[in-house]
Length: 300
Image 1 (cartoon, helix red, strand yellow):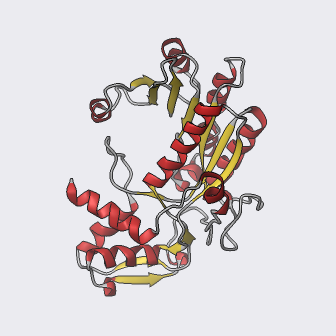
Image 2: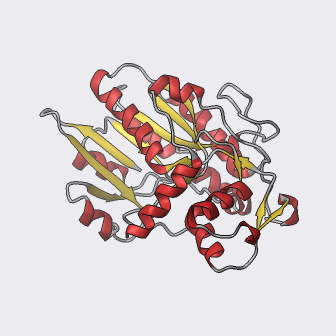
């Protein structure tokens, strides 16, 4: 979770929450002006410390979630408690005014996955607990908050973060397994619209700057994906193309060939017309994003 407060001098103060014993040192070193607070977003413990020291945030960006579908399926109660930001919303409402914008990251897995290029107004019929928890979160936010932007994100990919995240990153993983020169299975029948991380950041920054400059009421739901509908197979082929690997190592298989212990939607590609028209942001192509990701990894 990130919180931003606009100062009277036109500057912006930034804080973030974390759930570790100590804030990640690489992030603090890279961003010395940013304040860190330990908080439990399930119970709300620690959020009062944010407001006591930081004041009322003008913008809250909620990225916190249990985002592994199998983990949500295994522990539905934990998924709902974490993914529905009830404590966070209650805290934002405790200031007694409508001067805070909540930017909440949702998911493309709210859609059933039976057609291509879902639009925001299409019915949400998730096939797994992760998607169900995210639908519940969207409902809670729209019913409780005066100002919100809900971003239904596809797979977010890009370079490793300043403070490395624990779970494997999709492009880096594909590059690693293909570099070994052995044949690897990739699904040919599950489709997404992966979005480059810097495009997601641009969306959040655009919403933030607009809110801080004019403060007009915001109640927005946006699909946030890239322009390309691709399968895992096509994703791997893009990595191979950029790296010069032989595509003969990429074996095309149906998703049904693997039991993942959780239902997965077949096609949750998204129409991003509203995104491009509302914010004027055109996400980069998947191939260009893969190239930018691997170039960044090589430079570090």
